[in-house]
Length: 92
Image 1: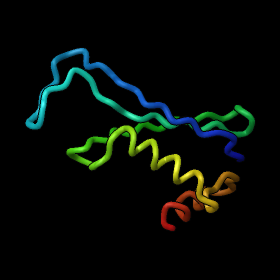
Image 2 (image 1 turned 120 degrees about the vertical axis):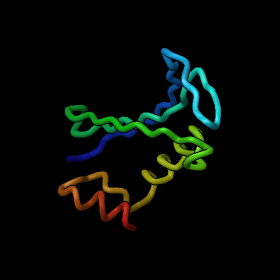
Image 3 (image 1 turned 60 degrees about the horizontal axis):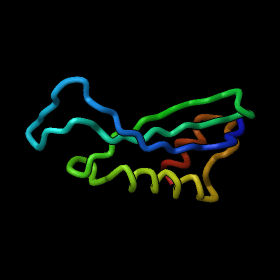
Image 4 (image 1 turned 180 degrees about the horizontal axis):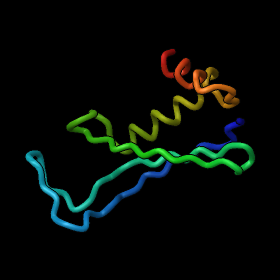
């Protein structure tokens, strides 16, 4: 499988009910969606991240930037023949 494109979307998802926890009350949440397009558009996959400064020390911006930095590495597995390539990349 050949990864052709990676898109990063910053989304704000409104809560349909009042959502509170010990740290704050928010009307919405800011997440990051990553879309992978492979084999000339025949395969699409999605992942969602929930960066929270008070939990992960990340923001929407820093998480998006990190994904962009990872895919620019020479070792990023654009051509996938085995799932182990992903784990090898993560471990490196």
